Amino acid sequence: MSNFIAPEIEKFAPWDYVVFAALFLVSASIGVFFAIKERKKKSSKEFLVGGRQMTCGPIAFSLTSSFMSAVTVLGTPSEVYRYGASFILFFLSYTLVIIFTSELFVPVFYRSGITSTYEYLELRFNKVVRFAATLIYILQTILYTGIVVYAPSLALNQVTGFDLWGSVAATGVVCTFYCTLGGLKAVVWTDAFQMIVMVAGFATVLIRGTILNGGPTSIWQRASEGSRLNIFDFDVDPLRRHTFWTIVIGGAFTWLGLYGVNQSTIQRCISCKSEKHAKLALYLNLLGLWIVLVCAVFSGLVMYSHYKDCDPWTARFISAPDQLMPYFVMDIFSSMPGVPGLFVACAFSGTLSTVAASINALATVTFEDFVKKRFPDISEKTSTWVSKGLCVLFGALCTAMAVAASLLGGVVQGAIGGLLTGITLAFWVAIGSFVYPAPSAKAIPLDLSTASCAVANGTDTLTTAAPTVPPARPLLADTWYSLSYLYFSAIGCLGCAAAGLLISFATGPSKGEDIPPILIKPVCNLFCFWSQRLKTLCWCGVQHSSKDVDFENNMPKVTTKKTETDDTFQNKVEKEHRSQLPGYNPEEKSYTNRSTESRL
Image (tube, rainbow, N blue to C red):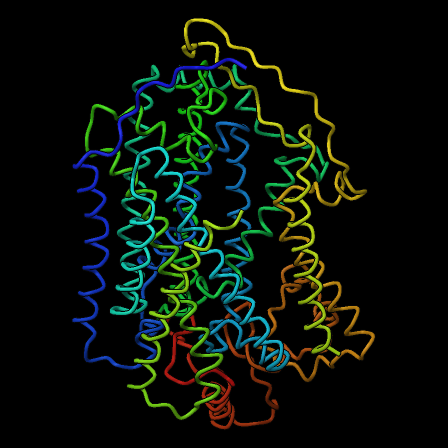
């Protein structure tokens, strides 16, 4: 292989550190502001869910920022650079996920008055299922958050020279600081600020990169010549890395796990002052997801246009694909001190928002699912201090996990069995795909060139590697272990549901009449609207027509005899409103948050 001369790339300058430090300073200041502003409100409800009086705007910004981490900022452009712009199809996945979340999951969680999403599992099943899911969530979130902190810090360190452990420590300390001081309100408003920084960073890179590469037309032409615009691949082979089906279907399952039932998402939705605001926040967040996705995809195309004839990864100027974006930024902004700092701030805005949301969510589920269950009579003042202590604890654990990442190379029986089966299947296929990567034919990057790279000493230095015998691969290596990574969540979800149903029927299913209707969203109503008889059949015995909520019209249904007087009828309606549906606001035709605890 040829040895190439790497061009000189400037490292971080003092102005870059100033811009980057400003991000952390503003984020910490927001925490201090809310600590002072909310000092007289000492309830855990205020601290963990913002008093349930948040509006849709900041929540929408917060949701977008939290789920567009530095992994997205660095990874998506690299993915487009190597595999093409089919990543843009995620806009369909995002759309499906937001529709399902806002119309299916949020109404159930919001109207049941819960704080921890896992409270629902106790309402629907029992305590064992709830605690099992909570423990799995805590473990998974700590592991994920550690990687979210460490991976981008390492990539930026190797390209920009930015201090690795300094950035890891600063991220952990600052996030813990403003989470502990300001609670959910500080997290939400800091996320809103970080979302602006993220978009500003992307916009700066896009504008500068487009100018240097001859404008949008030239970039589009080069991307087309390099097969980067072959977006619609309808191959149904599940082993292919990215096709229309893997992205739309597999991506929808993956993101539904992040949005539909994730504590971080649901916690912010139920913090809204009404269900209408919660739904609107999700739809506004969808717009934000589209904007970030488009910015990331076009950044990948601009980067490909810039390095079309001298790929820095193939030429070994960098050691990993996730270093492509930082390398590109340092290259095009080498004469503009301070601007690389803006991009690093853009990347770390995603990290800060993700880590802060995770810390807040971890503190909430731990307090609601363990502390309050063990000490039900805990005072408000004590509960607030315990919540803050949990933020400090999980902040420390997530930071420690980032350091550890550097060293890594019946119905109830049905629910538990399904949970374990889903986790086992997902872990099995994920670990198998890691140990035995898919054949290159299924996940090979598109062509990359080094034709214009400067060769050392002006000649090619060829090295001939000794032929190696490929290691033996088990029978499942080229099938089960080679599934597209986007199907892992679908396998876990479908495996959980299938095993749960089988075990439930084997041990005796519960009766629909015994299930509170507020815990079930009758989606069949959308498809069987012409037949009340068919709808009732699809309800499987759950009494949607006589209890709780008519989900189609957001109005409670009341059954009365026709012979009663109007006064008697009105009294019964008002009684049903008070006893069954606290929180319904007839003026807004929506449900508003109430001060009562959940139905537990």
